[in-house]
Length: 562
Image 1 (cartoon, rainbow, N blue to C red):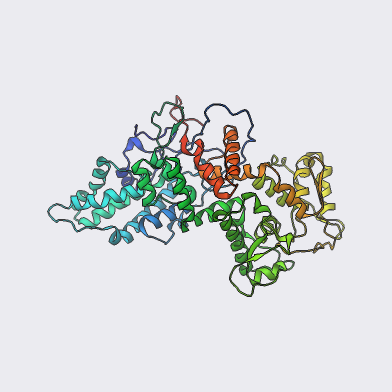
Image 2 (tube, rainbow, N blue to C red):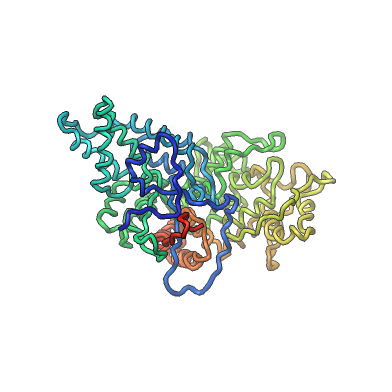
């Protein structure tokens, strides 16, 4: 296999860390930075739905830099380090709703300097744990090789060649030439491993760099896709062993590994990093409701966050169909959150599973304060934001962005004017009405919940009676949020949309029209298996889009395809 990196990249490395990085990657193998699309272009194109004969195009994934969560989790699992060094790194950009989108994970001089500082600290702190032998003063290289070869294999998530190890061993004579000993040379070698593109990036190589033909990932590339999808971290020894043995591509072994990994505590990363972004609950940290209208504190914020995490975790590990996220008749509350919701307190400050059969208005995602709060304004609800959330996150039917210079909703002339009367302006404006007729009625169905998710019958400021009825496109009417939820749960696009978000997150790229047939297959196969969230995840992982990659032809100016 050619060891050439995917082309279409420009060298962006700068600063003193480069010398160390070069030891782990020859100069002709350095990745180059891809021309990035504008970060505002985060909406996927509407996939067409052609007939689906013949082989599928798995799409191409840009050379994928570890984001901050992945970096922290990787050094935790590689070195036992829990200091979360990536907190000092620049924030990751987002694409298609997630911060692991390869096309926007660029690498600039500031981040490279941060990598250098982190690698130095990590090598210094971890050296006692990494050192597994005592060198012979007359010939320290065998001991050094015994340490560096398995360390680089784990850090680079693939077998390493003798030549690569030899380059790392070159730091020992370099240190000796400067009057330093074995320890200093080995720490330099460890830093080189941690600054190599093979560590900082999830590298997938094309056998023929000039070909655009799709090809299967090799076993170690597939192991990395799998571990960063489910764990936001490096493969463990069991997964690497399956890749080493060549059994990982076997369907039975692949399923066994997926189920093992979902049951592992490290799958909590899927709750935090996938669900936290898909459901918007990460935005709870920036939530600051008007304190004069809606009492809110950090204990309530944290209880709301934990409620959504625990419900999603139960769906991840349990036997519930994924579509029942909209209609789950249970949730998790503590006394603080239960009082806020008007539910009977469970009698503890710990989050406790409670039955919602007597409170159908609270069932499913629509009854959770975390989602209701992050889709509101600080001083009022927003039928637009709530309706758009449902369309984008649950149905993948986002309307186009608003035209330029569109004003927000003005304050009411009449203080008693309710939200529906105020929103009528959008319906009467031809530049706005098309999209708002899709979004607003869905948001009306959630109007019984105030901006912090508490139940209400009247609007706080206007005093107007809440009217949660609405009409969906096609003339389908609903009287309240419960009926709206039932209608949406029966939408055949719900499971397919969840699959689309999982595929986008799992691949680190946005959906394309070529994915339409793949998504249909994923949803259909998962439904046949029971429609659980784990079935959708397994169907994503079994798809050609996940187990293969397309090539990218080099253009004439050497910059790669745009």
